[in-house]
Length: 424
Length: 157
Image (cartoon, rainbow over all chains, first blue to last red; front, side):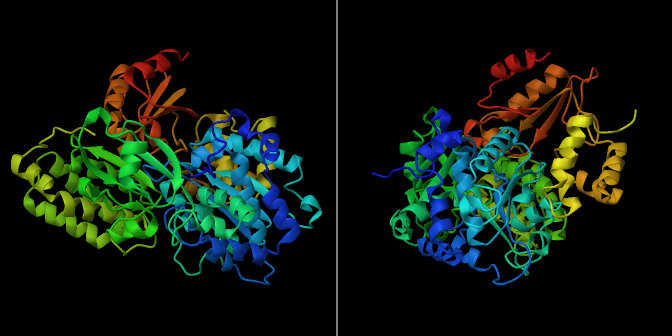
């Protein structure tokens, strides 16, 4: 029986309170690293656990921390990426509202390991209430001596702040986030240099997702071997799965990595809404290739989903039933990417705009079969030609929707209208 | 009207600036503060911020114009932001948009003549499990239906 690690407290009303957190063993891991562990030992433990980044890329967190150069005089920064904006993803919000001190403790340990003296939680601007909850939690942590100067007599100093974004998906990309933290447009930077070497204010900076950081206290408490034993060895640990769209019980489900997508939908999600037939699932947030109903017998972990040509991404599964027009669904997503493209790279800025116009034509029955080929070409010309992955994120749905549902696109052309009269 | 922070806002401003190693880092929170104080970010407000932070006006304009949450023109007293991205769309956000639009006779990005309501279609609000979701000013209203939203809207003074 899997015991919840990240969401065990979220339903308890007083879980936001530091006294509750302390009473249930909270901040023990942070105290342990301060007293017993060198920063490099902490990095090694997290590296051994094979904790992979929960923001979408799946990069091993411990390896990332290890990129921070040793023996330099610059200040180091730890940034918690709470800019949760990937369509279909709503897990970090749950952690921040339900167990904010767990997130804070993860940040503290990561800051110590990377020898950072300042940590910022970059939270999307729309999450006003969540930002207040974090501010209160931070104030409590200062009061109890877990933040500030000479924490718990260890000689380690750490300050932590909440930084609110202001409505821009691109700031979830780590270098866009850094630019935004510096008060600029969220325009991603060309890498290298990587943030670990020259990030915020050109200083060594580590950016980790909320859920990634929330895994850290239990790794320190129970050890890397314990963590590694949960789910598949190559991408282990507890995982928050988000389920939305045409399912009976949408929501966040914490289960071991490697959960079968079919079980997520039918067992945990209660099956399809109104008993309708499943048509398609985007398994990892809107940016990953779509799966057909025949492809959902798959383990939700980084490698298994990559094995069938999709991605785990942020594990935000968007479920669509057979009443969904795939052209209109893609149009909705490409509209999103067009709107959120930062405008820096021509292929993305122009390509998403062009793709949206073609899709609108197809959806309204005003396109020719050639337009479908053109759409495919436009998508292919965005892919891998931009500074950041937003371009790829727009190109992948285009390619996969066309590959798997091309007949529907053609039906729009042939009938001169949307066969389903969709209006998303 | 002179654009100037109140005493309380200036105190907040001082606390904000201390959080960042460089002054421009404070720009986003100061823009949020200005929007809360003045309701929206006018060119005069930008000039004021540029003087306060001692950074060029172009930097303030450059940043303020990038982010959708910064209102560069006045919005309604109640700013209704309807999520229209896929998970909400699958759950009927389009119908909710059309209803609100008809109810107040305003389209996307418009304000009612009395200045009470403004309507804006926004991209994913990160609350897809409780779709469709509507944000009115700072507050989220989740699992919305036309009936539930009407109740909320009709209760706004």
